[in-house]
Length: 238
Ligand SMILES: [Zn+2]
Ligand SMILES: [Zn+2]
Image (tube, rainbow, N blue to C red; front, side, top):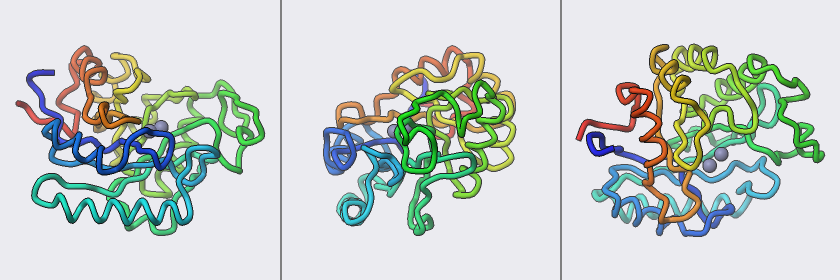
């Protein structure tokens, strides 16, 4: 919205996974949008088709480090990752987690190889616990806490979670809940409830192409309708 400026986009993808642009194009787009910070946060290695792993992940991280040097003084380029919840309390958290500036964790379909989804059972449940948003929240939170995640992406996407419980735990753990700007996953009521619980929010574009880097329109509208800008950690009053 006009009266708030988002300072950083910590959720962007590139052609290293299933996006269309390069890390450099994302950085240039972020500069164009007037952001102070950008993270390249590719899908973690546990995703069957999008996961970035092995030598490719090493190349990506080297490229991010290079961009950080090149654009230093113009914009802060950060090494991020979007991990996958791979089972109850489990994720594809990398061994070198400490080398990442931003760690996001989210529930996705198509993860390897630890849960039923990898076997083609694309259910709306975590480890077979169907229709239990509280248990789902517990499983994701345990995974997030173990990897000391900074952000939980798109809560409720593919898997319903107990938002009041998740917000309370995230406040205690210092984890931010994302208002995703690629799709609406939280209602206005839920966003307001998260704010009222004292948990921080973060807006992410979830861009899969450079033209969407820094596109916060959808999330901004939701935050405005929830009157929750005070809780958004990557926004300042313009
Ligand atoms: Zn995601
Ligand atoms: Zn994403």
